[in-house]
Image 1 (cartoon, rainbow, N blue to C red):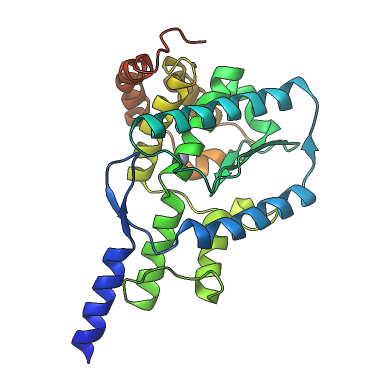
Image 2 (cartoon, rainbow, N blue to C red):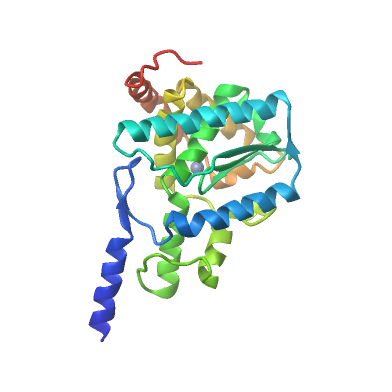
Length: 269
Ligand SMILES: [Zn+2]
C-alpha cells in the first residue's frame, strides 16, 4: 500500500513539473495559475482598498508606463521563444501607493505595487524599470509558487500536485509568502538562487523594454547604501543586496543588451 502511495506521489509530482521558459529549468509547482491567481487578485484588490493609491500624478503615470513596457517586453520575449499566450491568464495592473516604506512587489498574475518610499532610490524611470523588471521576473519564474510547493511538501511529508488554496494549510502558506491585505510586511524573503534568477531575467526584460541595464548595478548600490538608513528598508529585508549581486549585474548587462538587439532595441534610456 505504501508503495502505491509513493508511486502515486511521484506520478503527481511529475505531472506538476513543467519547464519554465524564463529559466529553462524543470520546476515543481503544486500550485497552478488557476489556483493561485484568483486568490492573488482578490488580495490585491483588498490591499488597494486598505491603502492610499496615488493617481494622476507624474509618478503614478511613470509607474504605469514602465509597467506596460516591461509587460510588453516579457510578452515579446515569450512569443519569440515559442511561448505565445503564456501570459494569457495575467491581468497586469500597476499601482503607486502613498507609503514611505521602501518597497515594491508583484503578486502572481502581474499585480504590481510600488510604494512612494522607493522612488527616491529609483531616481527616475530607468531605476523604476530595474525594480519592476526584477519583481515581475519573480512572478514570471513562479518563484512564489515554488516556495509554497517546497514548504507544503515539507509540512505534509509528500510531493503533491495541484493543491487547492481552499486547503487551510495552503492558504496559510500563500499568506506567508505573499502577505495578506495590508500586511505585506509579513512576506518571507526569496532564496538566493531565486534572487539571482530574478536579477538575470529582470535585466533582460528591462533591456528589451528599452531601459539601460547598466542602471541595475547602480540601483542596487543605492539600495545597499540606503540599508544603513534609520527608516525600515523593507525591500532590503526581502532582497539583501551584496557585492556579488552588484558584480553579477555588471557582468550581465552587456548580455542583456545583446538580447535586446535581437528585438531591434539598440538604444537605451
Ligand atoms: Zn527579489
